[in-house]
Image (cartoon, rainbow, N blue to C red; front, top):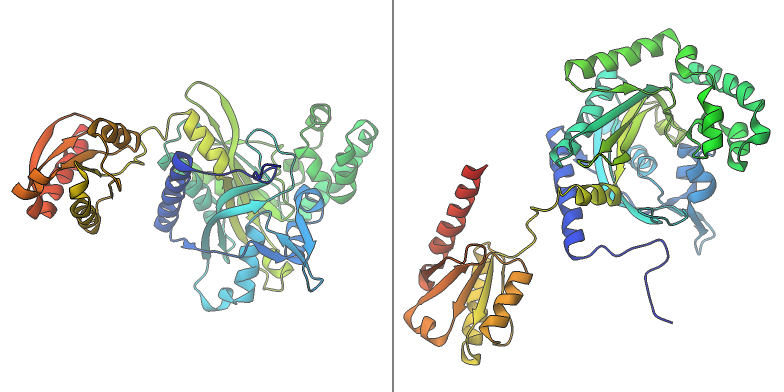
Length: 433
């Protein structure tokens, strides 16, 4: 049997890996502008971390977790999402007491869910997101939404559509759940098996059901806004008012609930429509939560956050041509002419790298034609051609592979020569913009 990747996992290689690295880099840079700091929590957590925080009514906990007993007979789980692990780390290290509040964390890395693999859905996929924990404020809810919009904007997305709703405080949600129980109780016999469980565990989950027939029934269900406490209503309108002042457009969507049980108050999703008019659905989602830290043994503290899947963001960016100008090539491909120059060329290539430019040279001298083909395939910007004559004279031709222009450069003045060429190129590019 051929040894292949485990079902539901995938290799991220070459240009795709460069695309992921670019998304992560932009994401981290924007998060740091907003005062967020990098958190890296373990992939493996005790199962209790997710059972306590994510809620046993959520599909993630009920059906999708990779949970097993380790050799010490302890139940451990591969993280299905980051929020619970970040909250556990904050409680364990007492960051709520030693750091200024709010604590602002950003993260990215692999997560695991035992889902039915389908197009763009993997069992190991990559998530990036943020948590802002420790201050209960509509302003931080609005700032988190602004951060989400800024990240997607910086990645080049246009035509973004923000959907927002409120799930109210605990009293509002309890009243709403009772109303939903009563409404769906009359229709449950004709609904899917999962909805039978949802009705028992958390009827709000039914609003998230993907079965078309059940969605039709849900359309006439009671609306959260009719069960909101005065305080929750005021808080929601404060958030909307801040978004208005930031010129962030939104649509209030009564049916938006999000998939994890810890959410309360504001929840949101950012949807995207491609340049060709294709609706990609939700790219990113999140919301406000209370009680997550206390569920894990910490103090009662509010938080707000969001997350997105890198696979999804990458495929939409690829479809929309947002990764076309991504530079993945090398700066200089050094071409040896003849076996006798290989040692000198190797040293020269190392010197170019030490100057901060990416460089490659083959370990055997091949025909120039085939070296040029390889240089182009590797996305090299320049080719430096070195034979024994060039070494003797201390001067060699450097060819721009995009324009085919060629100039002689002095090898003993390599730093200045390359700085001048790459500096000019950047300046030229800057003027074009």
